[in-house]
Length: 129
Image 1: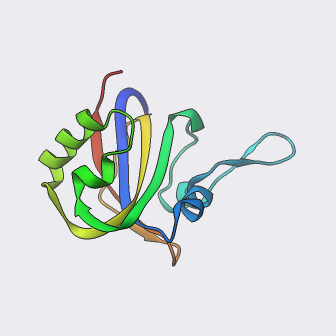
Image 2: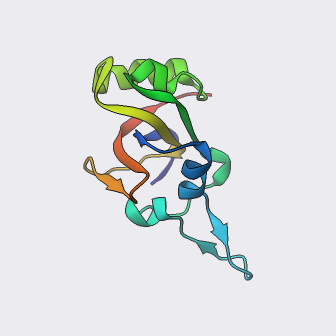
């Protein structure tokens, strides 16, 4: 799954940025071993480097790919590619996004929900630093 130059994207809804951060954050036990986050468990994801993850929410739901991705790293490259994949307007309301950089997730589109947070894996794009 780790592959330089790729970014995997999940979109959905979350009550706020703190709840989304808690949902995706890696934690460690007293021996330094990773305790998988709910995000990792729900999407059956392996460990990733936290320095290559971004997750955030926007004010209110939007169906605009450009609006949802506008604050993230490499957004001009990613917006263009994800608009080609998904269209300029999404078919579902979104206020949350999770991006894993240098991560090429290959899975069918899956939606997971822990109740308050509902995310859908939408695809992979390439980026260059």
